[in-house]
Length: 209
Image 1 (cartoon, helix red, strand yellow):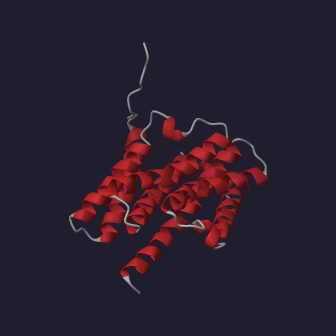
Image 2 (cartoon, helix red, strand yellow):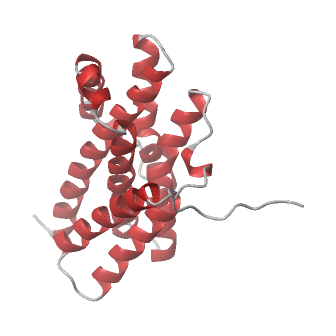
Image 3 (tube, one colour):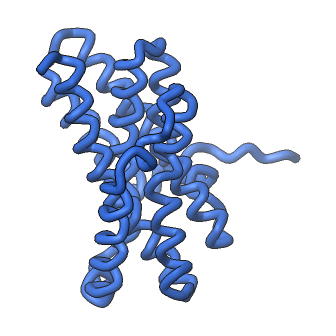
């Protein structure tokens, strides 16, 4: 098995993890809006695959990943079922939606960035690919649930994804082991998001006088 095939398998693992946690994020948001089972499933689905769909279309990797196998469908169904069955327990956890959404954007930022680099996209464009891969699913989720997308809030969201992507590029360029670079990327995004919420750090508003 060559390096490219190993990387693709690793990306697939990240894709399944991100799909699962983003589906949970979508289900929790839909449940708060009191949607029925079908509505909850649809929101979970589009949240999970929205960013990946845009990523693959922009990279010219078609059919997009979730259309090439039914594994994504079953991962999403499993996430929907687990969230519904254990919803009372899940909702008791503090800021559960925030947690799953943060894990989702961290995972998909890394996934989108690495996949773009494997397709020999310029690193600056690969960072944007990681960002779009991370946030588009959440944007679709929030729009369908009649919420202002988190990416447009003052809180640190997209900025955390960009910072994490830059961490990966920096560590990779200086020869740090791949697993360390990947772990540092995910941890940095999650840490930035948690610190931003904990200490109420936000980008300045643009105010017209």
